[in-house]
Image 1 (cartoon, rainbow, N blue to C red):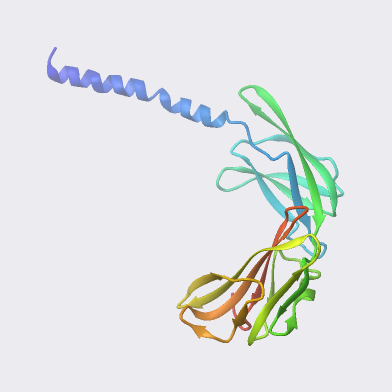
Image 2 (image 1 turned 60 degrees about the vertical axis):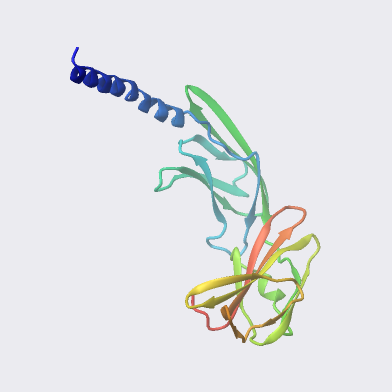
Length: 231
């Protein structure tokens, strides 16, 4: 047998071995069971028209029999995203609990999923949120945004945050902008901030505050903006 014929046979054998392996990879990916939490906490915003909807992935496989046990608290709908994955869209109606359930069929076997969802009403975490002798706590009393924003009173002042019961400060950051680039500096409660200063890292932009509920684990992000910022 010539060397040329041997080389051709080796190439053909390699193709035969590789091609059957491709569908096996696809089958393996499609055979994975969806992963979904058994417990979850989501928020209800009384004055919101859009923020009461959240999406939760169930992976690349379409599921069936999607239900909410308490539609007065929470409704659920399956949605396919442009990327090809599937999500369960929750829409909260009021505070309470509901069990979300669905089924997934994988390799001929049907799996049933149940998730206990606790819906909590939005709560203002601030007893005091003071900067430059002005208290902004009441600005967040009836928010309809997950990232709440108010305009700062310009000047030099101390940041003073007093959380309500069961709330704590997770982090505070000061943001500034220079030539279109944003710089972030971690600061502490009680820090003195000059919101008029144009420093080495640009113009003062905003203060970001993350608050966490120690009982529920829920976090809220808040922002105090420099006036006249257009975003």
